[in-house]
Image (cartoon, rainbow, N blue to C red):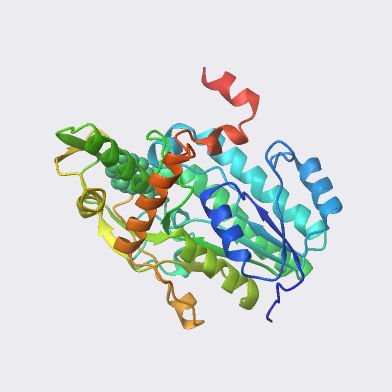
Length: 335
Ligand code: GDP
């Protein structure tokens, strides 16, 4: 069953984030009307507000890119925020989309849904076959709930809700806050600043041995539109690039791209997280989709956009994802 986006009202929740903004960019190639709601207009953790927004704006298609996201330290240190807010966002957007009669919904998860020691490359069938990686299990549990919501609404109501699991992403609009970012934007920023300051070294967290797969976010956006139009089934679909690299080699590659010539110092007091996270994207590739950007050329583009965003004063050096939906009570509990 294929879905045309032509003439449709397509709601992108989370449109200010790296993934949502890439999807909005990609949707501009489609003959559709893009619907977005600013964070001051719609709190996605508020069920009644989300329901009312959908009833008023009547999207035909819903792409769920909204999430509370963060790197290894943010995930590990804010478990309640990551679990609660992602559960609420997922449940509210999926349920409201169903109630609003949305004809197609794409839910975005994450490769961290899989067991810590899943066989590599990780096939979709590895879901719920073993314990999760403790540093991001809270986020993972919420994302697994989102996948299951899509499957449940499909099974019970016949809703055409699908989900995609992207690998580690990077690109325009990334979060460059060193406490809450993922590794790629952190390395770009640290090496750029070290180059400018002529610093002798840059600190890289952990041992450098973990392996990660990276995808340029515009490739993910293209895969999302492809799946929205062509895929209609209960199983979630991995979206990976096959570009796997150790954190040590990634640090060296980033240094080359940025032009930083100092030393790399590995800080073993910081967590490594899961030892390896490479997804098996055979299912997606067998459908006929492939990405356009290799790791090094994507990294060059990401560095260019980091410089351009910096020049425009738009580098996200605070994790506005974290503050966006944080309920006032959460801070009180922590303090
Ligand atoms: P993960 O894929 O969920 O583990 O998330 P991250 O992208 O935050 O981290 C990936 C790996 O990069 C982990 O092994 C980190 O320890 C390592 N790493 C090295 N330097 C950094 C850094 O400056 N920031 C982050 N977030 N991770 C880093």
